[in-house]
Image (cartoon, rainbow, N blue to C red; front, side):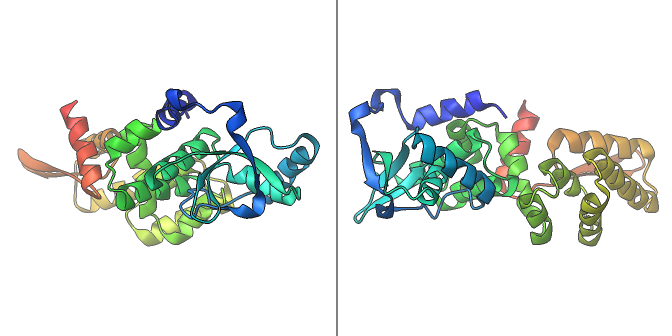
Length: 276
């Protein structure tokens, strides 16, 4: 993950001409601060929080959190993990910087901070992108520029939301990786996909194993309709290029190529690949 690109994205939100002086750091009562319900990160490792709390007891909160002033109290923009650990450490106050951000900026900054720290699991990241798309009407191109990640990376992240709740849970719990999950998307049969997801956990299968199983199942299906092996190989190459299902329908010397897309943003991504 390129933290340099993400840092540039964060800099675009907390502008250089809006830097905070030391005397603008306030000590705010922890009880006056609320979490952000739109925070992308939903899972906090209890052991890691305890470790951070121990460090805070000894050294204090080294880096201030960022908050937004509400009508009553404050809302966390960045630094929820530090705030949680400070509560565990039984601090009464926490150093904070108060900034005036719009709701969409709050969402973006929370997302960027978590991506920089690699704190989000792949499903949380995908849900955060979907929230920016659906709730704030942002396009993948705009998200790409604001967050500092490529459009294909964002599109591939969003595709993980096509997985079942059971498989998503395995990703969240780190039982299977994002690479495993993307490989599972190549398996069309939902039942087979679930079976292989369970095998990943039980037999410690790697991503290449999943890709091989997916190709085997596709090969069997294509053999049933008497598809030429050369066309199967071409389909696999196109699938890798477009990052989605590709089907070639061949009738003697003519035919058609079918490229699947899952939403308008996915279609735009494919069109961009074709234009380039």
